[in-house]
Length: 246
View 1 (cartoon, helix red, strand yellow):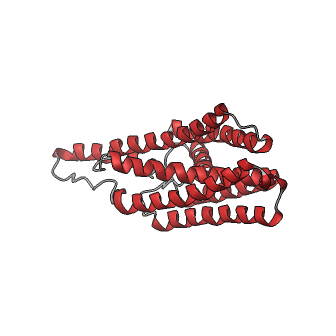
View 2 (cartoon, one colour; view 1 turned 30 degrees about the vertical axis):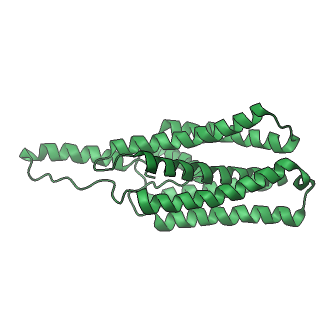
View 3 (cartoon, one colour; view 1 turned 180 degrees about the horizontal axis):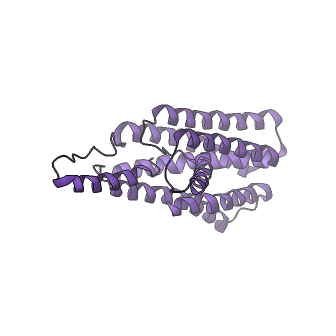
């Protein structure tokens, strides 16, 4: 969990700066490409590690096998890549617009966490801090923060990202800034569209074929002597129910 927080609070802003420098100055070199690719991979792998740890922690949850893990990896990598490139494009066009967009998305994510009534932390102050950080994470990728069905929420989430991404590209086509003539702009645009389409495809495949239908089953406590073992199981399960679910 802490690694996920660190990734989206530290690595992601650095990645924005890398892409902005790449597109603004147009200096192409191997080290710059490598740094950007490694940053994307680092963000994705932190999410994968969290998902693997979550599956090992929760009872009756299937182990993350190789094929589902690969599909999930590509789903996260491609959707995050498309979205970060989209934000980078609008930042290049108007820094103020990108800030307004990010703040608006954070408000939406934070409001959603409030409505979910999360209980991850013991104190109210820490709980609000937790919800604030989750709101930042929700800007870049989807997380299910309660043990509930996510079909509608995830559909709205990625439909919104798709509309915003296409809207940014249409704005470029309408305004036709001089940067559109640069080769790196063409590369970023193609990568944005391609990763968006492929990411949605892997998303659909994962949630249709590999996503677990249940995160845990109720534990029978009546058969235990004095209910002590059942109470311990309930406490253990309840603790993990408060984690972010994906």
